[in-house]
Length: 181
Image 1 (cartoon, helix red, strand yellow):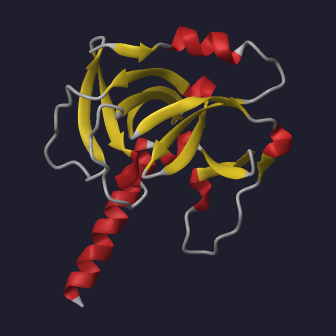
Image 2 (cartoon, one colour; image 1 turned 45 degrees about the vertical axis):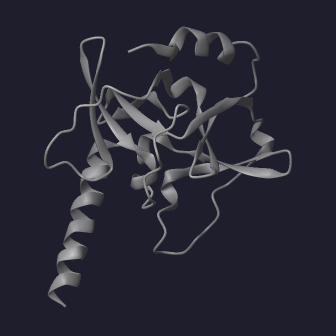
């Protein structure tokens, strides 16, 4: 599996401008999202996934990344959307998250990677209040770029394996309750 971009290249970009927060932007279902560049380890081409039985729908499988097993999450499905078609621009972004005091690598399937952007804190709006039924803790903020918004993800919440399992169990319970009604 060939790495498209490695962590060392991200470190060079991240250290190039002090005082600016840098984000990797990517498309998912036609919408632009961003992840802080310091959470990104590398970007690899899509492929070589091993499916694992009895996993939640948003877990596409696992990959072997230099001898380590890395779970791969379909971010579209995680956001309760339809999984996108795999194209030649589809890739897996390897993200380092902190879970329970430990660091873990998680792969995220995205439609395409856009670019690394600098978004100053002054151009990041706080997460809007959506009401009690919407899970806004997944959003770190709304970055303003050329008059448009980019959703900046709170990766430790979105990709927390423990959180994903709880959400999946809750969804399963809700489905069971609907089926019984």
